[in-house]
Amino acid sequence: MHASNKANYVVREFDRAGMYGVTKCYKVGEGRTPIDCRVLVEMLREGPPPSAEVCNERVGRCISFSKGDKLLILEVKGREVYLLKDECERVSRNERLGYVITGKGEVRVVSAPDDGYVLLLNEVLGERSPRYQVFIVVEDGGGGGEV
Image 1: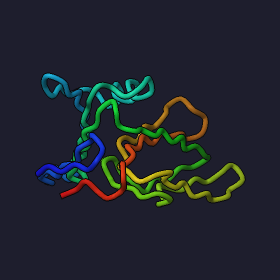
Image 2: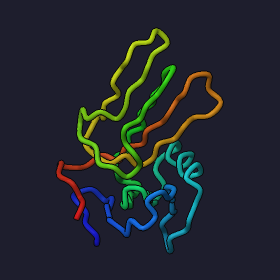
Image 3: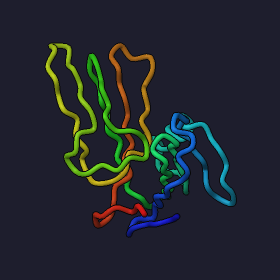
């Protein structure tokens, strides 16, 4: 099943047989080529690739996007980080993405800056404190693209 809204990205449901599967990333062009999601993260930092797709077997959904789509990168850092959303899940503006416990022991809420889908969650390794990059594909005109 396919559906799309006013943006170029496509949300598609698929068989949930692999409930504990990993997130898979693909470069889409003349074909659908599997790539490591860490490579896609590097490509996204430099600017969106011409088109790509992220599929998450745990939620049974794929998100296809292209260069014209608006992409937000949210940095989340603290002594402890607890993310509530998974890749390819829909988020609404101001919806909780997770919690951060600061060095002083305070709990802070991390909220989505806009409506869209969590494309990728990237843990930045080599940092003293846990740090994540949350990539969000922004919806144009509101309303979901799911079927």
